[in-house]
Image (cartoon, rainbow, N blue to C red):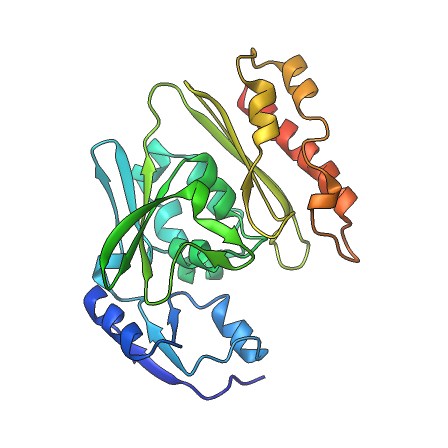
Length: 277
């Protein structure tokens, strides 16, 4: 199926991209295009214009700034998973990315595209939640840093406002011993997460997040509270990973019911924690 007619623009800089957004308020940003183009072909999205930001230099690259790893929003999955800096400092991130799609998807898809699109079944939202990241958003009035806990606001809805662009992902580097894991039950056709659970264990305790089961990624606060101050062993993990979410709060469909997804949350959380300890 073909898309509806649209006008194509290619931005050469961040300032030019922001200017184009001001001139075309109904336009959509195009980076990897793996979510946007299929939606346009199905006429689920019919933007009158596309602004290609894939070659904007300010949106690419990985660097360390003090105790923070800064990843440009247009950095591809492959660039992240093949980065030695990322693998040494935050191994859970490339580990999760390796579970996304296939090599073709990972060579074109971008971290910022995934986070800004906020697909309920995407993998990276849960990962950045447990990494306690901050998201840099640029708009006509300047830049702002948003805590990841307030970034995802609903199905396909984030803190990025009209005329704004997600430009960077800021991940604090672990202080002391920190271990992270991501476990998911993938849809057999799409490889999207039917349920995905990310867990991080550090000096400040356990941080956990869930994707795939609700309308957006969320923290697993019940699991975090159950393990707070507890020794991490098979017994405490078994006790904590019981009825972590209410099925009534989850999505269900003809393939995977809400009750089944709730069961998977317990199983995957336990699996991730046991793998870490």
